[in-house]
Image (tube, rainbow, N blue to C red; front, side, top):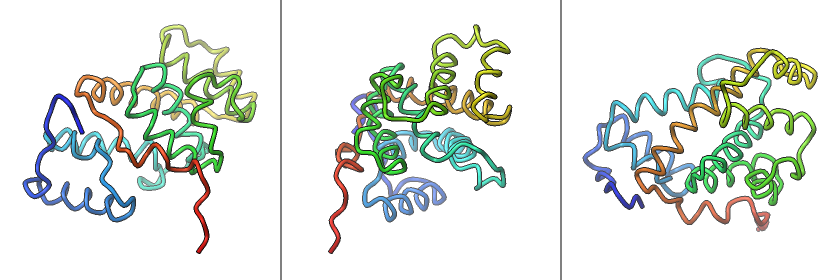
Length: 196
């Protein structure tokens, strides 16, 4: 739960937001706290999740991307760690573990992506994302050339930068509001599901 701002009552939310929250609950088995924490301001909730979905699920807006779902979550996890955002590191780290099918990768990426069990392509992607996160004013053409050498095109580079920037906003709102990760996130993707 958010420590500083109480969550609104689900029953009092506008119908479109309530429907989306219930859809997420049905799929995940719980409601991630971000959905309720941001719902206190419906117009901002709608804008936030529209941009979130356009970046993290580009197929929903008819756009192709060379970044995998795992790549996207890796960017969020690494940059959120730099921004000291507990909520996003834990929540997106859980999703990263699931997409990459690697129970250790989120912890590795959050602490030091250069020692993580990731590809050289992903390492270059995170090098750039962290530069955007911490020193965007120093980005230059050589940064693009380094990414091009790993097969990223200019639209991919836009995606890396935009995801980094968007979650910079998200990290700061989560930190200021005191948003805490749902307990469910801590265990997701760490132990394979038993068959049966």
